[in-house]
Image (cartoon, rainbow over all chains, first blue to last red; front, top):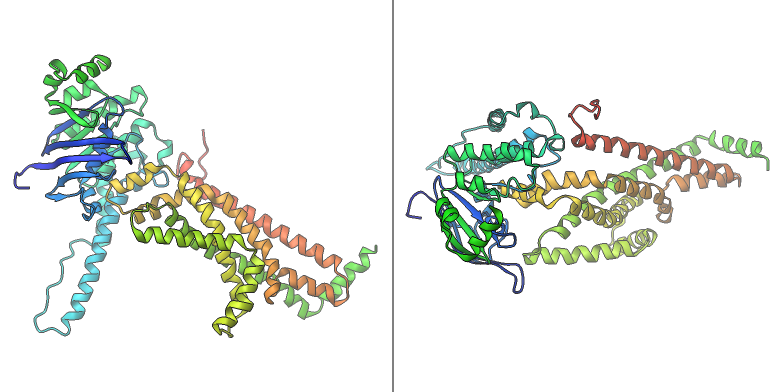
Length: 281
Length: 244
């Protein structure tokens, strides 16, 4: 990607689930650094599928998705490497039930950090081994942190994130004891612990009791204010109007209309969008 | 029937050191084969189950899946006795292996047989774990294997513990077929003791009592494990914490 500050660039994205069940029929979309994009659409319109394609949770059946200059829709790309930088928050929270809150947040950073450390350590071992027979000694790969430091750092960061959402005292409990709102906020900071370049929210408040929607939306708003790039699928129209830089209306697998919240809510052009808004507003 | 005489005959037989050692060996062999068989079975079963539930995108996965299906069909489709006989009296001579203790054959066959059952138990367990758990792990950049090992399998094991306990109990009791390949197990030992003076009633009752005690101990062990795994259901990590 030459155009700097473009984070995600989707070209001609298609997704079909088997014969004739085409959910996405060619989506083009760019998300710039710091941009907040909200995807709207009726149920079954393909909006969730679109979001889930952005980190290849669903493998696209056509088109490209460029993230950090690499086409992640290509099956040959190492998707795990890129997913580290794409945070995702689910409707059903999906906290790891067998891990405490702290472990939930620390698991991915520690595992990925330690795996990288081990790979480097093994490589260094072989470099040292071959150096014995070489005149021009090859240089070792620098290792900045030990395993202990990786863990300590992840723990510190996890506590900082928990403090931020005021749930520090819940660090040692299991998710089954938390309320929906608490679970979702922890799921959000779990994604944040990886320092993502972009966050994907898949209907983050749809599974919550009404009185808990506020606390989750507030957290997402704070993230938005801090400049986090995000793509959000939601049914919360007030939130969409307030936070979005751009709203995308998806229907029948294509983007029917796209624009600022003012354009979409106050001056809709597409007939389906008008119909949709009349039902939800 | 004179139980007093029968009991005394049994006691007098057991006074011989040879018979006491025989009983101990039989007891230990039964435990050894069941425990090691279960461990091998869990390992094989977990591997098969993971292959079975893994997405079948690549050709390797599809081939492995077929191999596992055949494996399960063979080991669930034939009686354990037949498998023991085939392994010990057909396979070993065919391969020209002589220096193998019969108990090792027993452990391997028990493990492989148990693996076919555990694979189906485990598959049910893996399917019982919410798909979202795998998705959450993958979304964080963890690989399929890592998420499986760290998140999905622990939750699956928690769900299938009672059924695994059943499998262990079945294995303990089925060790009595080890006599077919000359392993001294609990059954063989007590049967031999009974043959000493043609008085088998007491030895057989003792045998039943030992099996029952073993099975009750396993039941207790499974309960204990269930409590440990249930900690994620509790309010606190502290096991003493009471639920409100």
